[in-house]
Length: 300
Length: 142
Image (cartoon, rainbow over all chains, first blue to last red):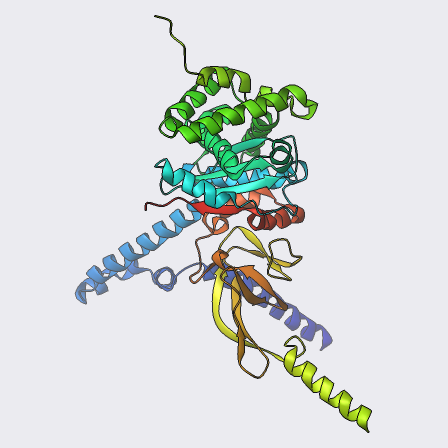
């Protein structure tokens, strides 16, 4: 009696487990698909013809095909790597998060109100519909920097110790940010962090391998570190940016002379303060920039 | 007797003058959705205020209006902050980080990519803090 009862219970348990798994599997399928699986229309083709239902079956089949196609593409899409329009914003923030202890941006700072000045500054120079995010860092290891974001969006880092040491005004900070903006617009940063295979990686799909190529992301992060903390930009790139700045600011002599004087202030700081000596490595060099900007005295 | 009456009067005055002691009435205005990758509910309406909890993009947030006192003295949470409730937590969140419709979040657009990054708890916290520390702007055509 007990044996038969236990067998009955066991079979019930097995049945329930089976039923659960089949429910789970079938829950992914639509009603149409389930119906299609239940009835084998091939065996009753003559009946269907007589009842003039073969057209209906074709309609149902095509509907099911569409559903399956859509589901496959949705499933495939889940393995997409963000394209160019989303990748840079995401990755720059990812890098900022990973480097939060080094950059020290999570601290209480005074509200400099630079965002308003910089907004007017961009508008004055005709750069409209540009979004920007300014992040103050409490570290002298980064002076001022722009990192890529979504199209028409820019992330700026600026060091509070650097601002304090130089006693920079809102306008001077805006000029520095604008210099970074020009540098980013010319694509120097993206060029410097572009590792082999990154172009193909952005906007790709990893459905087949099911594993994301983390090596490439780590390499890009390392390149970010290298550019921001160590190598910076070349003389050629700096020359192009300085020339651009000169051309843009020439129309407003007050802005031009503020920029010129500010470069002089930075040059003095770099030469006198050991903490800021690496500035020349990142942005070579304020002294050269002053020379490039200086109007040439042509002797006729 | 005099002392008791004086005490009663002073406590009554304190209750009416000091709105902090008076009863606070909260009224649900609407439900919004958090729009950034991650964020924080703050104890006070300040970007530097302590975090009560972390929220992810697309999380529904209940926005409340608060009435202090019986005189209908409505307290609006300025133009920057909203008083909100998420689960058991009550606090403040920046108004411009909330959307009326559920936003298309990065995590939803690229779920497998995001999962593979294996972002840990401290990074999640910092990511939320990042949006607190940004000073943002946009240049417009005048």
